[in-house]
Length: 434
Length: 144
Image 1: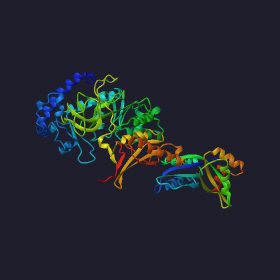
Image 2: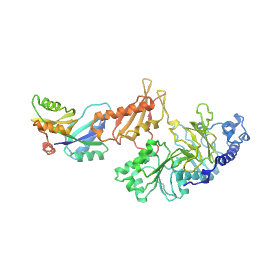
Image 3: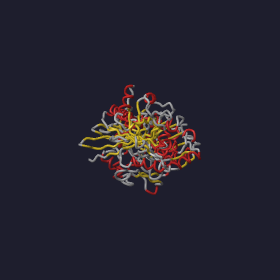
Image 4: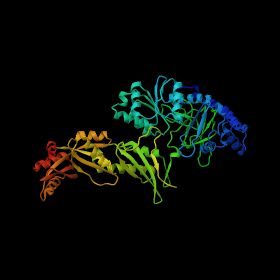
């Protein structure tokens, strides 16, 4: 089901909407947001210099640092009385980034999330269990409002108490699961321990996962745990831009459709800031063109992807962004090699004898980076043979060497010994001191 | 003939083995024999216990990984050359030993827990050589 007509417009129609909204947004932020006015003045730009999409690249970027520097409300374009919601990012280092919404912003947000839910196969009659943590985090309430708009019955179960989550799933006949991929797998694991078979005993048919990256290998694990009949899609967003709802996968599973009437995507070279031609890989930059409270201009997401303008079989005409290899923030530099934890995950999940639960420990010894992977052994027959365990260790090492070109240490650990997560999984432990 | 040996994968950290011993004690399960070797990061604790199926269940519930492997328990007289004789029997038939550890049956003698690359043929070979192998009932009698 395609929710909105805006998802099937012609390229010209999309450009027309984007142009009008971009001009209006630039005009507005210049007059209402001091830091933007300063940046534009410094660049020698007046709002009227931005006549259309072709002028977008002249505008200065906005970064996470700008949000921190203007904590909490410095980038807001409306007076506080117009706000009806405030969220904040978790912000592990430094101050959190604070985001605000007017009534219209919440309306647009719900609309965007509703579209994404439909892309992922959600129907109006779903019983939707939201296993994201409610609170300052945008994930839970974003999905909540979007699915409510769709007409689903929301079970706002939040995270934690997995046994009870499963009781609700079983007794309510939950059909739609909202969770991080790692929590979705955890729920299936606890189900098995409780004697509940996810495929036979539950009514789950769709999962919308988000808030952390899902690799293809992880999606396969999800099918294994929840059943092949499931529609399992991921969606993309970040609180600065709105929360979830920026883009999402359709059932063709070939990239995530961006809600282009609300967000203009660009791909830049992260080193030079130059805009790259269509189809090239680079950092995703997003301009919010319909937000009242926090209209970010050319926000640097730090996410590496490429844009695909080819028509999609699902019928939508909106541009798709390729699924992420990893967030730049998550990237590790090991002995000069860029390593995305997702690359390690792909290798591990491709090996039958180890499970989806792992931990990456990075350290520095004798001025050289070390990388250790701790992974749970799954296979029963290995448990009585040192030879088989050593063989597995060797196999993991050599596959990692092929993918990353790095020699690493592998530590096999027993099942259930690695921490499980209910929200975003934290699988990397970096012990290096600068 | 075959005895169900319990193998537990465990990380090499203080207190890990104690956790297993405690869990079995709690359920009144006797550890008849234990084989353990040193490795750097992890080890496999192999044991013959009084009720292997239940022991496995108990450990699984406690979050350990335990599997059952069929092994042979061969009697070993307390005399010079007894081990040699067993090994000789196996090697002449081309049977390769994977691991072996001792099991005390009483004051007079003992036994060896044996795992080879081909357990069925090992059983036949030892039987043909006239060696005694303990049954589960016999092992369970030992503690009385």
